[in-house]
Amino acid sequence: MKYAAPRGTRDILPADSPLWQLVENVCRHYFTLYNYREIRTPLFESTELFTRSIGDSTDIVKKEMYTFPDRKGRSLTLRPEATAAVVRAGLENNLITADSLTKLYYLGPMFRYERPQAGRQRQFHQAGAEVFGSSDPLLDAEVIKLCVDLFKALGLKELEVSLNSVGCRNCQPAYRTAVQQYFRQHAKALCADCQARLLTNPLRILDCKEGSCQSFIEKAPAALDHLDQECRAHFDKLVGWLDAWQVKYRVNSRLVRGLDYYTKTAFEVVSRQLGAQNALCGGGRYDNLVEELGGKPTPAIGFAIGLERLIEVMNKLNLERPAEGPELFIATIGDAARQVGVQLLAEARSKGVSADLDYLGKSLKAQLKAADRIKAAHVYIIGDEELKKKTGLLKNMATAEQKEVPFDQLLAQSDHSCGCGDDCRCE
Ligand code: AMP
Image 1 (cartoon, protein in one colour):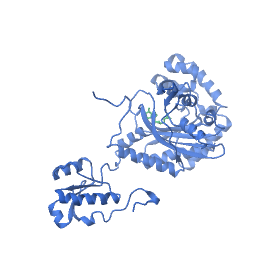
Image 2: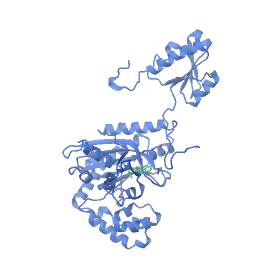
Image 3: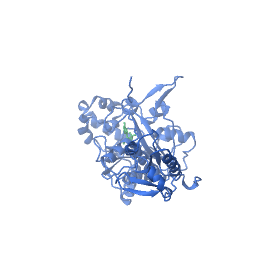
Image 4: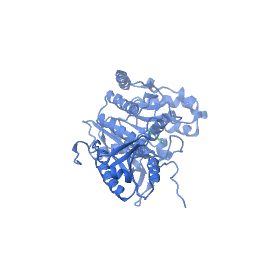
């Protein structure tokens, strides 16, 4: 019996993990640079948390949640996104208070029962940030700039920020009515889901991916034409800040995003280097959610980046990939040489140089082959001759260049790079 990974999931294999680690490190770096602190929440939450926050009539809640009863019959759901969980955890742990600013970030897997295709999986990973406590449009600009900065740092170029305002409790009802009236005229031509949405949640039609609905969506009433004074002023200030920071954007007045909790700003960053599923990240303001989940009224904004899609673009760009193998492989011939090799191995590791040697009693030729297979950057060869001279042969595996390096010189220049930071006590 052979087992396969469940449909819509993927193993991240050792050949890919250096790129994943690079992306995760750059995310962490930029979140920290913008003063966000990490929060880690459980992978599952009570189902009601998601139905209340994301919205009963969204695709996520209606069709895509992994929901199951636990042994005591409580309904639990694997998190389809993290915002609701971050709000829950923020409130439960008194991190979110109405009179202070709280900036949080997270990284981790999310679960949605979707039809698997390029850029769409059932388990996928997001890196996201949430800010609580301010309705200042400068924060909206800041989170958009954070996304753009982070993508640029990873070498992405053909990016487009798509921007909209979906209004607030005050102006959304009139917009919803306008959208409903408009789509009613075309009801028969809409897909079956959208015909149902027409009654339950007409704004969701704007987010429909069915080809047959697109031409109607393109001509639907624009949210920006229905904003009240406050939402309009918020949007104008936001674009003013984006202009001041020279962040380019394109206004897309039909952008609604697949979650019901958004108010005012909604945005996506799209890569022209991806196919149909081209949104690398999406986010927006959600000024009512904290209150809806039991907190005091607290404005908030956040976004999530899809890491699989980000990595797909990076793979397409053929950027230089981070090193996959160890810096050093020590190849030895005979017991005496192995004794020296083992000492050098320990010295290398203690100096922060990643290193390994053979554990399978292989011949020199086979050891060199193994070093090549694990993508070691250098091989240091110690045989009988080298033992006598106390000098090994250092081979650069990329250039095949070889040079003699005395045993006591091999690691003499190496920096101590243990990664312990300022508190390092390794030396
Ligand atoms: P959302 O949580 O729906 O706002 O999505 C934010 C980002 O997560 C999207 O722009 C995608 O990059 C990514 N994403 C959402 N759903 C999936 C999925 N099923 N598979 C892969 N990435 C996804």
